[in-house]
Length: 157
Length: 265
Image (cartoon, rainbow over all chains, first blue to last red):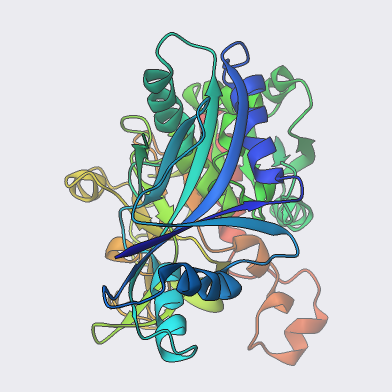
């Protein structure tokens, strides 16, 4: 079973603002990019025998989310996104050392032995004024959001 | 001879880099990223110092690589002017495609992964004095113009993302064939053992610095400006510490750029 934690900042997101600024002011996407938001995504593979996934998700969120500045949404298995933006998932295709460290901490220091795997990625939600927003999102991912020598991207639907 | 030390928001080694350049006989100034880019053309050479441009937002070097000043820098580099990227400067040059300079963005500088006896023993930021072996022939590269092949140079490194990786299976072979691998991490005897702590960040083939095919653009993760004076060295004769101008090994990088400008000028 997979538990997804979508996490976003409650305070202004300087990184998202910088990326939007670069796309708009430096890379010519000013007329088509109307908005850009960023989320962190943890996809945690857990034991199928877990009895109360929502409760487990809440406990995991206590460790992975700083609720002083972040909000989160937990879901089991499926990821659903609001209409109106193209969600682009960006992660590492090389080994993710931070994800490995988080898995080790959850299992061996915090007692979450039911967690089997941790995947970490960033979701860029692009609001695009285009006839083919998915194509444009792919272009933006390839020209800025990833370095193909270490990152992959995926358009989430 | 006048060099521009290009400062982005978040650069933090620009003053030391300028001092090191001046100690080698170069004139120069700090060039802020938001000055009119065409003013860059007035300089004979360029340095992109270390730091955290744009707070490493998105990826180290990714945002700075899209600034207009980088377009002008590319044009000046295409004219043959020398460019030296140190640490974050190297990351910016890789993200911009200026290094290794073959076909767009050819590589990435990923998070450090320290491996000993097949086990990952450490990840992320690491700061240490290290030895580098110069693997290019003298004259191949602007930033190591005066350094003989096989020479060893000590200087500090301090970074979290210096692990050169590539998805192009042939890239490293090409870099070797074209003598674009300028510096490798090695032990004090010059051996390039592919294990931490000799290979400090897991970089493929112990690569610490590369140049473009023409040799005028050099990027390196270690910091030559932090070993340009003998008093900066950790284990030094106390008498040398009192001689403020005694050069350290890193000064050779800046003297090399000066010589390159003289010869190519």
